[in-house]
Image (cartoon, rainbow, N blue to C red; front, side, top):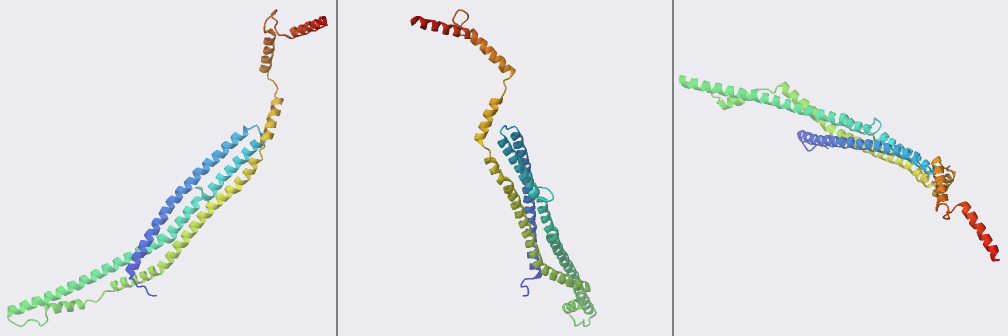
Length: 309
């Protein structure tokens, strides 16, 4: 079906769509760079947090809990690595998504912009040639009219009949006698060919930009899914690892260690001092509670019981 709009209208619409798409790609690139930066920063914090959990876990006395800390620490560090791999600032991460956007600019936007700029230049060239052509026609018409007017005045001065042709007719004849220059014909033919290329490019451009944006969005979604899937893969087993920590067994280990603890020299000194203090309580002759006093009291009680019998 032949186009129902002029080449100028189609080119204008094409240019507006291209400008809108160029702005779209620029905005997405800005947001994608910020998103990549955020992932990189989060991955760094995740890795630091995982390392700190490992440090805390190494101070734990219960072996099973220490092991759980170690596993969780390594899993979180693994998640951080996955974020960097798929969406970090590295070449294989978010940078590859940014390069896709650079690719659509270089492969779709820039060539199309160049084509439209080329058409604009050809339109200006045609306008210039038309202006030159019209200027020549105007000058020729004015010159012919001026010549007739001059002849009429000269004839009147001499009292003879002047030329039958009027200045207006002379002007029209002179204008009609100016052939269209080859340069204008060539310029119009070149513009016509360029318009054909622009019309053919409309469909190609639309298809290319849609495909490029599809690939970008698909790659982006795949990377988001992959790092989340890796996080699930690494963190899911940690639930079982944490549940394997036995609190009752930990209590048993605690009491066992308490029993195995040898008293320190300081503890021994304090114990000896405590014994001496107990031995001296009440003083001599005041019924101080000592081991010897207890033995003496027991002997006296036995004698009293025998006397009573």
